Image (cartoon, rainbow, N blue to C red; front, top):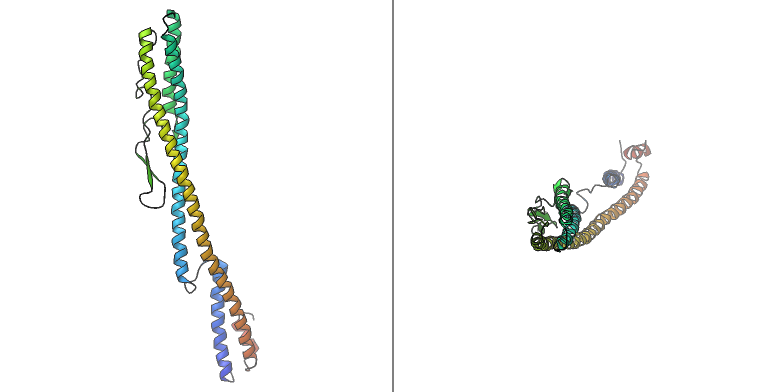
Length: 269
């Protein structure tokens, strides 16, 4: 190709450079990837923020999974509490000396069924195959944040009748019923304490989830601002290149550069 003057030669080289830059920007706009030539520092910041957001998302999953486990445990403990309260009523009734032997036998039968119900609740209360009231939740470490030290340790004791001290209770006599009352009251207190701890853990996790949500929202907004700013700059860069391209073609049209060669360079012909 023959160009008749220096101006035309310069314009041709400039058009080639503009076309290459325009192609890079178009690739970035179409793929959504960030080219190293455009605001590399913002790219690094955005990637770091995205990594933090992913960490907080994992922590959020941990928090909600643990809340599900605790809610399951709380439901089981509620059932155990109801059984204990009914057992206390039966023991009080059996402590009355006016009852007949057949009355006490009937009370003892219901009492035993309630004991069995407690053990069934302990066996059947599961979360993701974890028997949450059978001692499986022991020193459970929950990561409640994206950083070191942001964790919560949870232990739920075995709540079966043996660990609650309820085995071999007999309310078929006045003395046995009175002794059972003391044991049941102790068991109710222990169960209530566990239930209170579960409530406190749940409150702490709810607070952690709220903080995680706010942090993720703020980080996502920051990341969006950075990436949106890059997108705006890319669009402006593309507009600038288009203007330069048109002006350069105008210069070349006055410099005896064959029109077919210009179209070929631009990929039009």
